[in-house]
Image (cartoon, rainbow, N blue to C red; front, side, top):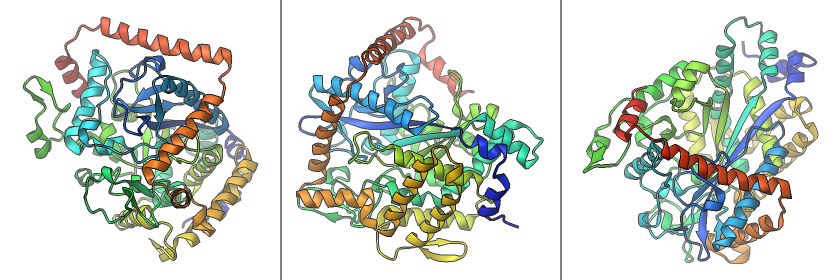
Length: 520
């Protein structure tokens, strides 16, 4: 018999589990394109003043040479992560200002002249650097470069070990702690997948894009004379079939019901050749086109809105790290950059995501059936394209329900646990904001972005460029403490030295290095 969420909360009230819930960990990864003064994707190298994209722990690049990625360490408080992210943005702003560039604050890219506009990231001559570059070359051959220029916010989450110990004792589990962690992280993941449409509605901020992104294809959006394509009720076109989706990967049928099936599905995908990728070729006339011709070159190629993760040892494949050590944290990947905010999100959003993830963890979470998997996909597709449409209905086991009605039910359950959360007042304030967005769709970031375009008479390209300039000035005006600035500068210089040392120590040829890596 399924236990009600209220009963679950009552059972942990006043126990060490509730006390340990006060200790949550989070980290943030944020991507953003460098653009020039004309609002076009930058053609310059990754700025040396930011350090080495290969070896710097906090400032790197993702797909394109111009696609910056900022990474915070793990923090106990969302505000601490935000402060660290702000320092990275301010440090970056000075580097970009010196070469007359800006950080594009939207998830959907700036106006693109085509594939030739996009430089694939370069990471130097070491084998590790070549592996990163060739993986991205493979993505270009498989999916094209343009899709790889989309930017997002990734949110990493984990309770501390004190919680897991208390939770195991509370549930009377006497098995392996590693297995317990993984089992309950996958419980969280299943609930996340069932209800991630809520995050898309509340935080989706990509309801429009520049027409150059789709190169004249009819994609079912309204066309403006100014070169913008708009989804009148869309929330997150980034997470739609226009963005991070892949028809080839739909055959994977990756199961999120437990770690063993998940890891085996990925292991199968990274070791199974696909004819259409074999036709591309792996090494042609002495140049690599991809790491291999398998369904996935490496695990990171699998697109999903949430991932179970574990920090891998140097050179270790992520799937093997999961097999060996179990799940260590989850990475939420369906959050758009909010172009209206200087760093793309704020602490209120982070507090709500923490609350949502704890709710996903504690709420009963049966395995996902094939039928439910279909409902999940259907709900996702509806919300990204039409999430703000009045009367929009989603499907669940009990039948159809309107999005605001279901969302309000979920928020009501989260409200029951707000007092257990760290910084409960911030969580309650976040819940109030999210209820306002459910009650009035015009309060959502996606609606606000379209309203700003209309009020100012600007295209998507023009508005996001204007915001890029405003945010850069904000970051330039936000001072970094003198000692902190010296540390950041030293970190950047050290990362350049680390890359040089890595390259100087190189002895193994790349073919052998790649073969050994793939043979794990």
